[in-house]
Image 1: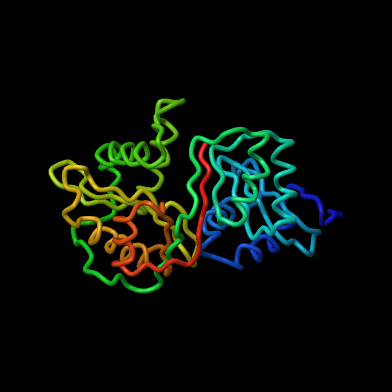
Image 2: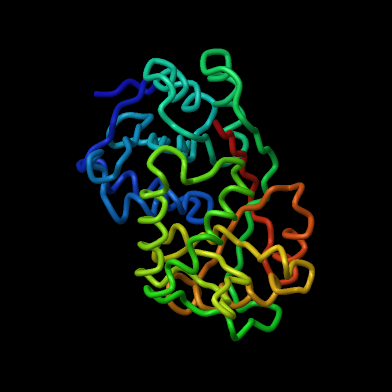
Length: 280
């Protein structure tokens, strides 16, 4: 039996309790919920471990430990327990991300051991929209077809490099990143306005449950920025995602990206929380 002051790796016996914890905030915990709903709790299938805090039958908080380290519904005591486990394990993730209160505390505990991060993005508004967009969708934004992957991929690489500050081609030459883009296209969760063989606007739904989906990778070609393509483009993504993926559409955005925040607000998104991302 787990002491409330410790953590353990969760398994299939804990699935119902894990889903109950994730259901407390379906928007904030969409990423972790989508992964677990798809793959379960087996680390080999999930590509990550899920740590639990609390005794079986009284699970209080979770931490997803994979390429991202993501605390879920974690109060101060749970965060300290997850930090202890993460310190013992050593850093294996490329980022910490999640609700600011938990991530800020987690990073303050890990930084003395893990060292400096490449970037810390605090105060990222988490936004959601549960109704139709407030502006007219761009009818030229459509799901990307499988035969258009090679057209979409350069735009995805450019967006990733701009947003994260490193290229997704590093390491394996981009094979893993391409496979992820292809996966989203096959799932009809990649959307773009393509004209003359070029992507002018694009975005994807990167995580989804039956209740909530999370938009990522919103990007406008540099040559047409400032012309309002993002407004109709995001509205189109909302309309398409709500009709085919989940009824609530969410995203999070850097607080310093004022044009993007204005765009999302005009489309109808409202802030429902705050995230912090720590990038390595």
